[in-house]
Length: 408
Image (cartoon, rainbow, N blue to C red):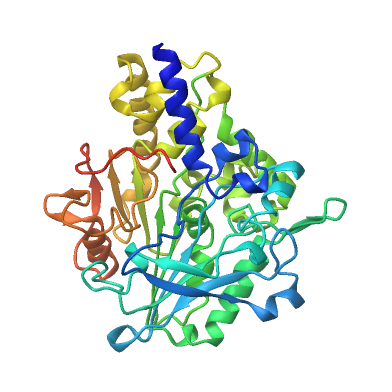
């Protein structure tokens, strides 16, 4: 009977998780790798920002998987933030073979024709000072994710009618935003969530190179520190996925040479092999028990045929001592991978022990019950780091007031 109820709960969870994707015929495997990170919230008092297509992108073949124009949402800055820019790269996992990418192109993650015409700007994108005290009046942009390789591929599959042009989308978007005033920014921050958080690491130095040396430029990755970890079956689920992404979408040529000169391309898609060589100031915001990585990389359904991790996967309070020991090893691996990075005075990090995926949204960014160390919220910690008010190197073993996330 217990197993029956577990099955019902899991079915309900995945049903909610898949909302918005099922109509496009994603199968269970693809759903497990997709993230709801950045999904629009509808309701009272949220700022809704319209979709802008990038008209010049087509001539550069900077297009989504299905060949449609890429797009972003822009809310102009004002007052003291009129010449400051925040660029947020949307997340949404990856596609690693022709079938998964063909399915993806029939969704908003592969076609701008299927994107929402408006997006809610909350958390770090909010225009309310009480919700977003540091960046509320900046020019704030969400670049939509429609390539499936963290804005880094450049190839095509003519037979399947697929365009893998993430790198070109990135460049085309930056060129368009520069023409709209970003060139004259006195402050700029590149952020991203999940697959977009990985992209913010991959493109961090490129972003810095767009501006004059007088511009204050920094980058932040939220939930983008994906680890090359061994899963519960002894395999490497995420490495296998990344190998397909890098090979299929032509990512290798756009990876940093300092990495590919001594490591294989797949390894150079993992942030742990990149961050020590990034010259631009970078902030890593991540949960040590990242719910998406635990559910999809460490304990994916494919590695758990008997369902031993069903309870633990959804709620850490249900984990056995041996399961928690395994997850503690993942946390230690993350902290070890950040050791050299954390030694630089210009870098910052906030690693807490929440079971979530993404913490710059409305729920965790800045509120009385947001995750905090002492009395400092994530938003305040990021602000202190960006504006050079204090060094921020937080590793916290607690997580207060956040419900475990199962929606990635």
